[in-house]
Image 1: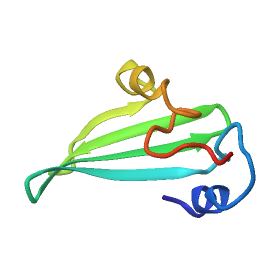
Image 2: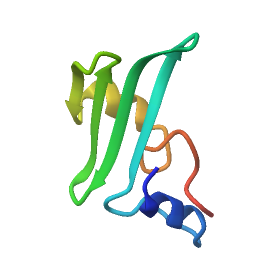
Image 3: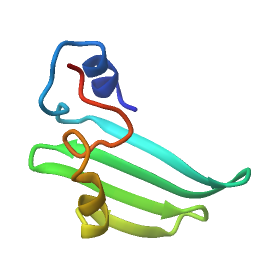
Image 4: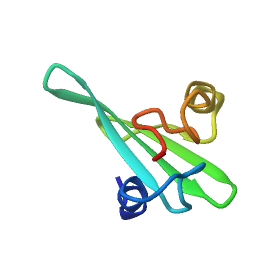
Amino acid sequence: MSDEIAAALGGGPLTAWPVRARIVKDAFEGDAVTTVAAMEKRADGWYWAEWSADGDAKYSGAPELCTGCHASGGDFVRAFALPE
């Protein structure tokens, strides 16, 4: 996660993550990385990108695949909650 997310987690109540917040995660099958996914908060909303383990781009932008699933999270982040 970016410094913006780390600082926000240690701060007071938030209703949205700050612009420039970035989160990156890896997906695994056993010990092998299969996917790298990233999201970045921009002034106009979140931007998603996902790559296969060999670096091929799978998704980018704000595809329904990402927004549909992430809509259930606090400001589209499902890995951890907005600070209360």
